[in-house]
Image (cartoon, rainbow, N blue to C red; front, top):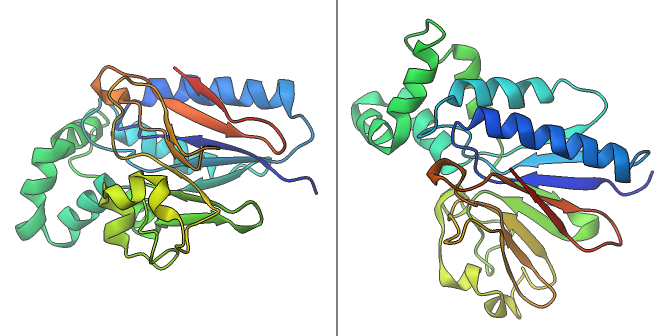
Length: 233
């Protein structure tokens, strides 16, 4: 089978309408340019909090997992982790989650007549992985980033939260276990709402283009043998 065309999507943060529009553009792009190739759709986490319809975003990406015509990988972000912690230990973590956008998430469930997220949604969040590797192409997909010296055995805390310079500056990957890999991530909104790359050729791709802050929701398209393409809504 041919190598898949990989479509990676940055932080959604409850922007369900933007996600639906971006999915439509990606499916149309795949049909027009890569028909006959497998489609791998990777969401980089932070589905919830701050935006208007976190519940709708979770419903959408869960539903995509049931499709047989595409592969779907949904990664965990730090906001999913905060939501999980808020329900695992509400006395310690619920207020922190609410102050970081969890109040908007609860409102999205309230619009559906639910006081709290369903047990199904919480279980789904708990099962989300923190890292996805396409080893044949030496590509890593993660929410926030990686420690070049510990890759691929970084802790979930690093995968979900890091903004360390040793990750953002790909020159510091030289001589580490991350050398020769490409990393696709989100978590840190770009200042100009444009996707960010680092390295020559690019090795790090930041797809958090501030959808919930008045920016855009962005996908990167990794098709074998062609330059990376970006699509945004």
